[in-house]
Length: 289
Image 1 (tube, rainbow, N blue to C red):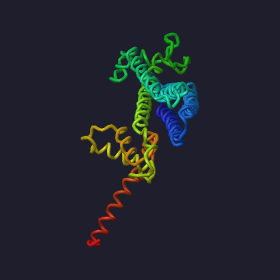
Image 2 (image 1 turned 30 degrees about the horizontal axis):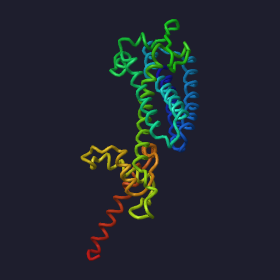
Image 3 (image 1 turned 180 degrees about the horizontal axis):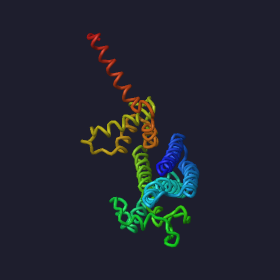
Image 4 (image 1 turned 180 degrees about the vertical axis):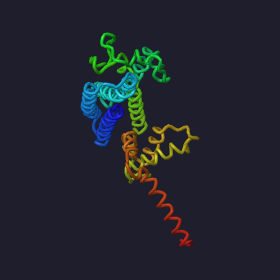
């Protein structure tokens, strides 16, 4: 019975993740992406809550497992999208790159501050300890503690003392990745200043797709063949964008889309191999040309 309940939770999580992956492919603005993400996750959490209230738990072990591991996977996405929404709504105008950078770095400092504030619990969770699980992840109606500025939902049937804090740890890792991506995009755009002012169309131009160029960028980065493997992916992207006179856009998001391909993840890389092999075969057959 408990395995059946857990499979329902896993199924709900998979459905939620699939819907969120679909949003990634829609090329939405940051605000719209966050707003739609919040809607998807809120619905998934409510469905999860109804299952918990309806079915309960077979024993304390299964209850701990749910509130320590399963629920935070849902709740962390809600927190993540709320953070993105707040960030994007209050984001400086695109031309104000200096304040954009300050804003992103301020958010990173807030994440660091949150971890320090909850250092003991953070260490407990990250190190895989279990000796306080019954205190932290068993529902006790009269023992819930609330703090200002948290994302906790007041619901004694669907909440323990620290499941929301664990969710925020997970959300902060996702949010931190997002912030560093935004910093990299600002940095890349600054390095590309002046591309539009080049005279005419002299030099090399990339005439393939941006997705193909993104494959090439990450292939070079993964192979470690630039600067003895010490080059950052954003630096490689900036250099190739400048070399080929193209604004590659949000290559981080493009790479996520490549990763989600069901088949032929490396279509451009495979195409390069095929074309090179064809060229060599041609020269083998026509040595004088």
